[in-house]
Image (cartoon, rainbow, N blue to C red; front, side, top):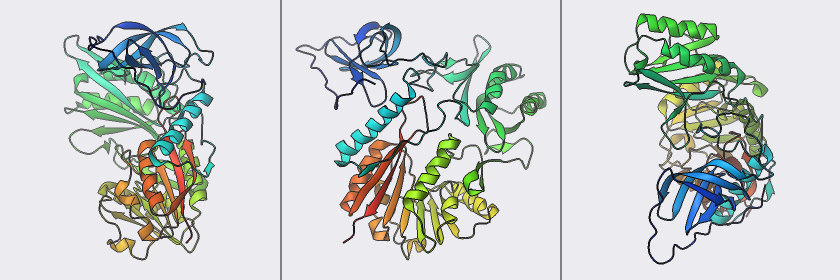
Length: 452
């Protein structure tokens, strides 16, 4: 990959304000470097252009998608002069579908881009680098995604049902017959789904469809009006043909068409199975998820006599494996329904040393009954907005070791600064390649309290 310079430079526009660049305009550009999100950066007539699908050193023809002030967002329409780093996109829909943004980039370059983004955020926002960089956790480039949302829209004028994935930066639906990032069991379901939906008596009642794969495959149909018996039978027959469960969601919570069916995923290394329902958060990449858990346990190093805290615990993805090593695990989550399912998962896996609690994690923790006595180690896996309120309290809880799993390097870096202010050192950090073919960065960091 071509070397990327640090920091963006925005060229001045000169004296008078230039007219706005119209959406849809085509422009030839020379790409200088990459932005953190994998888009190419070019400069033209005093404006900075962010161009999806372009690589440094390339000359491209780009079409404007949006423009504001001196910033223009565009997508590559034609490669005039290609970079030697460019590879043919393995998916024929890569340039139109909004799911994968960097398929034109070799996987090694994708990893380098993500690593650079994490390092840049830690340096710029927290003025720190880890004492040790961890080798990226990776899995297969393709065939990894065990969950997908399929867009559906009824065109009342044409009397047609559009089925597929959303286009990049658009509400347009791209009809897709193959998606190489999906796990194999979901591929034939995706291929056959559009025709089945179009055969329904009332296709306009379908809101969207979600596909799942784990201990079973499943198709969730979100409908905005009641479905007829014939339509339900047609959907159920489609699912039977593909060895999948049918789940339905109208005005209430998702429910299986056949009562008693359930979804789940296994953590084979630890002999665990976690059940979930559509709508619950699960990691979409099963192999990287298992590697992530193993690395978190290695870094956190829970001992058989220690009490460990798991914050933002979800279904127990980390808490249950932790309970196999620690004396006690206290797991806390802000969504009550997830707490209940996590507790049931612990029960069904015969783990009685992990206890789940519902709490608002923006409030002080030390006052909670479950926090009394402190913790030797803490693991947290917050949403994209991070854990600003939580990390300010970790030293007060007695945590000697903290593992922070992040889906947003910017908030990880912000929270790192707070941890360092409490006396923690950033011992290790590295990326988790949870979403190959995208510029999305997941990361893990280990902090240790400095000895006095």
